[in-house]
Image 1 (cartoon, rainbow, N blue to C red):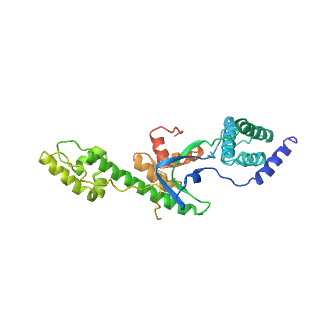
Image 2: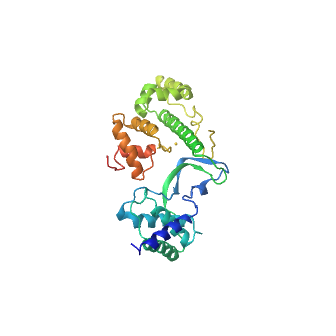
Image 3: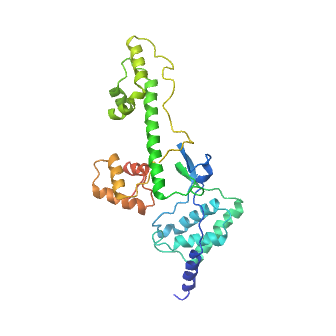
Length: 299
């Protein structure tokens, strides 16, 4: 026990010296000079993910991976600074129940810098898709403000995708019968109510096509002169698989039920807790993956 005491003290001292550094390179994709930028098709970025409950047998691998990506994103960090960041994670019982010894952390840090020395430069792990990227360095925002923007952007992207799907279905219509809301609903697997919400934008075009179908004339070309308005990559929307993170039990329960109405409340609560323990973000996309068993968690 006496031999371990200096190691623990060194870990605690090192972790208190840790400074902040970036955990993603997402800001590099912002080109509009504004507080945030929308990417309708998504953009792949690097993100250092600090998962919870790292199992004992995975500690070395997890800390090595985290430290490696941290150095790749922050190439000016020293060996001591990377070591300090690993100490901070190692001492967090929510992340690692049984911490590694001081010497093990030193070895992991040395391995990280040896890899950098061997390769000359480390490439960040491109492992995350972003649809909205915030320039929090030049435009600080609260978590609540960020959630509001993400929610608004998600809604706008969903609307644009829905309108585009309706337009493409009308544009490619090759059946002898007339186009109706009901037939589009069946074809696209949207509710009739959803199609009615956008019908005013298409009804004149549909009327022209239906008239030509009735008279056995070919469908007119370029009657509908523009595709539905979409959210451009540089659009700024005033205060989103889905990008929004459902971190409250109420919001999580609601979105889960939308995709699986028959699930019991107890199962949803268990899934809410288990996703956090497994280090899975509570996004709509991840919730769908769990329901479809693409993400396997103990239920």
